[in-house]
Image 1 (tube, rainbow, N blue to C red):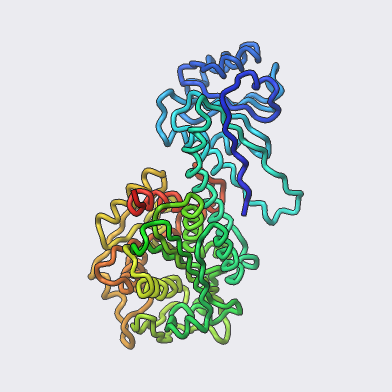
Image 2 (image 1 turned 90 degrees about the vertical axis):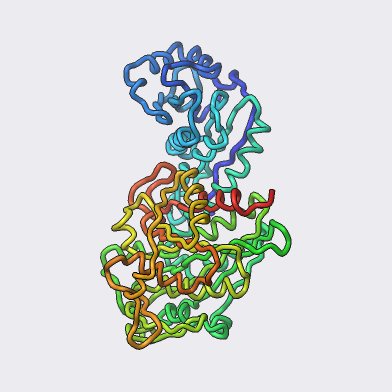
Amino acid sequence: MTTLSSVNFAETDTESLSGFEGRVAVFVTPEGTLDPAGRRVNRLTRGALKRMTEDEGWSKLKPGEMRTLDWPAGMAAQALDVVCLPRRAGMAEVRKAGAALGKAKGDAAMLVMAGPVRHAAELTMGLVLRAYAFTAHKTEEAKTPGDVTVMSSKPDDLQQTAAPRLAVARGVYLTRDLVNEPANHLTTQEFARRIEGLKELGVKVTVLDEAEMEKLGMNLLLSVGHGSDSPSKVAVMEWSGGEKGAAPLALVGKGVVFDTGGISIKPAQGMEDMTMDMGGAGVVTGVMHTLAARKARANVVGLVGLVENMPSGRATRPGDVVTSMKGDTVEIINTDAEGRLVLADVLWYAQETYQPAAIVDLATLTGAIIIGLGHENAGVFANDDQFCAAFLKAAEAEGEGAWRMPLGEAYDKQLKSRIADIKNVGGRPAGSITAAQFLQRFVREGCPWIHLDIAGVALTGEETALAPKGATGWGVRALDRLVAERFEAG
């Protein structure tokens, strides 16, 4: 996994500012007010900091934005990062400030004078999240990222507060690494192997092979992988940190490690991005890592279907009829609508095996959700208003865009089949909604369920507030907060 910068917490020592050789960060209010660290830096630089903050351009900066002075005179530092931050800045502004530092950090060590900052744990999280870089396949010599030292008046308290946030960051890093990996490196077998690495954190991991899935009747999932030489698998991750015997929250993820579309093959342009079609499984894995790393007091089970959708003489054809684990028959109209087939069997297996208190599934499921919501929001579909509201609240608190979409029986007519119980697609109109309607058929009545279509947010072509271009790790933070606020024991 991509290595996080080591984060150390220390008591404020302004005397250390002169000799630190990496990057030094100080915080100044929009009005130009300096704290003790700022005043010390101003003396060392013979007034350069004050002149910077008295310049007309300083007043135009938004909270969380910064200016940099390279090789400041009077200091050993290679750069002085001056962050504009109000005294009573909110959590989002503080994270933005941390992200600005993380983007600038590079491989250098960094000294952050966080004395005046409220929500300094969020500052640390924002810094670490934005400092991520996926370099696993770069041939240049890998550099170990320099340490981050955060100074405050109460470093022990800050370290304790920051620990669970850094656990979340590690989960986000894992998700980003999985989504960024090329398909020739992240095969179904390799994905399962990486999941088994969670055993070191106390997660119970079980991997079902094709013979076991065939015995269970998981024919929809198996049909997706028929055309590939990579064996299909279901990986199950159990974290039992809550009350013994209490029903778990189930997280279900689509893990299509590469999607050609199968016989209904995709256009060549952009197909290289289909390495990210396992984004839902990546998020589930990252959340399970986070929960175990911070020892969450909750029972959560993560289940991911790992397949590769390829065309071959053994591949499923349009027009084939396949029987699901539930027993419903499905007419395959389009083999490129494969994610819902994977999820349907895993959803049913999760309910049969674990009788969960609630279910959240995640999938890079439809292009239609990108047409509707772009890359700013994931589509949220739910059968339970309270459960949905709790998730939307968690997503908003974490700054992860999410927008509720409708469900309704009227859409089911688009999925009616002449020769089977249901079709796997309902045509172009309301494409993301009919996909959710298909999945809802495999959720038992009375089980609270949320479906998250993350096709537009799992991987982006532009950097986001807390991530560089590429995989975002969207959902790890929101789901961790949902678990903390709704499912953890008091």
